[in-house]
Length: 389
Image (cartoon, rainbow, N blue to C red):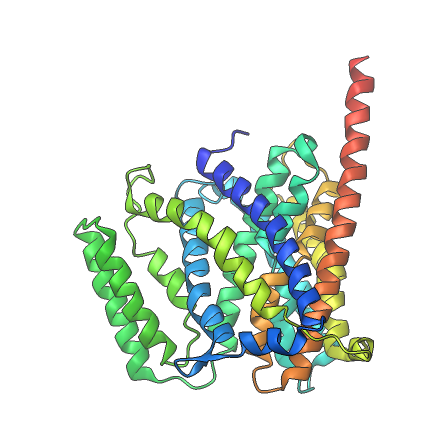
């Protein structure tokens, strides 16, 4: 299986971005628990135009992240791994299992409690971190595993976006929502009239974001909607979609996501932090990510292949699928993002404990996934050498 240049560029950026995310998260946690703790945490809560800096990052800059996700998804659907039903079905089935089973585990522990809204937290996969860990395994990683994990994570993010749109929207201002969709309709007409200049789309996107922000639906959804009205054409280097996607890769990987990580991991960890891990909410998050993710991804992939709906690539086996599932348990960015929406009215304590649970679970998932795949790939490499002899 050959990798397209776009996929290679995406994989390389996500790999470096994942390692940077790890570094800035560690630094943020150190600052938040240092003698500079008060000033450091207060900085991110500083109001700029009636909103905190963290709020502008989460509702503003993260829209650009979702725009990139939308552009990547569009490319995968039209030209990439999701353009062929044969190739798409396996990661689609895996992603469904990776969302349903973790959410089910969480609800099993939290249904009917004040924290049941957190069911979406263990559903997500952090693309940058997952690919970053996979890249540490070097050239032994088969191409099909890279593609499977990347496609799985992109579909997971789409699922998380749908969860945000449907389940974390309480009050809707229909006039603002109608205006946002009317602007989108206008941009769609520009697309159909073959207007390729990006400026009207970006101006229209900014207006869409404003009205979506004031509609009650989370403003970041604008990013995904905007991606699908930007002209894709044949997907070549001269198209508007390609140019914007190529331009956004580095700012998202090396500026926006690190800023999100720094702002949202400025957590003061008290001496009683471990007590928060005894709650059904945090147990549900950790079990969902560490156990539910690999179980769901493997189970649904196995069912898809057994029923003849999916095919397992020749250089993949079920051990590698389980390893990919373990890396899928690295929730981080999207899990924290959903936490902020799910527990907006539950108080800082619930959000803080949830973030700690996500960090611990993502670390465990990344570590187990890394060593599981390292052992599996090494064993496979030895078998090949023995066969050649």
